[in-house]
Image 1 (cartoon, rainbow, N blue to C red):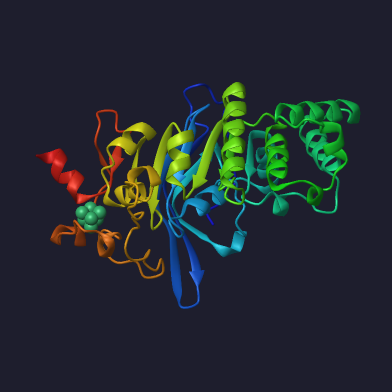
Image 2: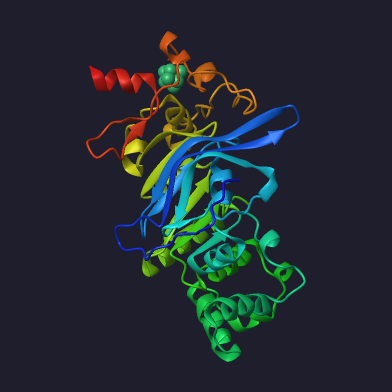
Length: 341
Ligand code: SF4
């Protein structure tokens, strides 16, 4: 883990990204090997933006999310290069007391299963009041009024009753609404949502995500949505980063990536969407498996699964800009050839 004695921070403005990750590489030492979880990842989230990070298991998306708030066990990983800033604060160098200020106040996180984030032995009200009082220094009465307002805002009909409930007394969808209320309770500038609705059924999933987006837009909160579900990205995100084996392989405005995917891996993810398939046809899947992160092949790591692989693919392709602003990029030799022709 890289450290430096001072933690720098500055006041963000509308043009300063709330999250900036620059060329970040992270390794997990394992028995006789090293798992290369992130390999030069760069991404950013602007104020108020909803940005998706998509990829299969082992793509590095959840490591990126967890590391953003330094939620991984400190001795379990090694940062071999790059930087990560939230609101100008160097998160890789931040001391624990600074991290505590950032977590919950500036940045909140919503996890896949709220039962693991909520304390099962304490009433919802106690848990919400603790967070609000800790970060906002309100009286108990004001904190309770704020908690009720937040729950009502999440379209919870009887917030007073929910404050008296234990988490296990609520449905999965209701628990996730409570988690979203808790996440918004300190008016964070960034909300990191790691597969926030995977544990819910499809109808509730959509309701919860619509609510999340509506409340984020109202408050100007940015969201980093971590998901394996291309359909969610297409419906909810302004921009998307596609990750594979710990690297960004494609990025751009969601509409552009959906309509004109440039990387064969992105095309593979999109071909698994039901709307891409004619009635009676089987859903497409990407053949093969994600390679072992402890023994990544040289060159393009998607090579063994790619129908377009060619000799040059034994060299790692650069993340090549497709547009003049450099917001739309793809890491594939096909893109390099298209851009140079
Ligand atoms: Fe396929 Fe080559 Fe592009 Fe990799 S670089 S995705 S192997 S065409």
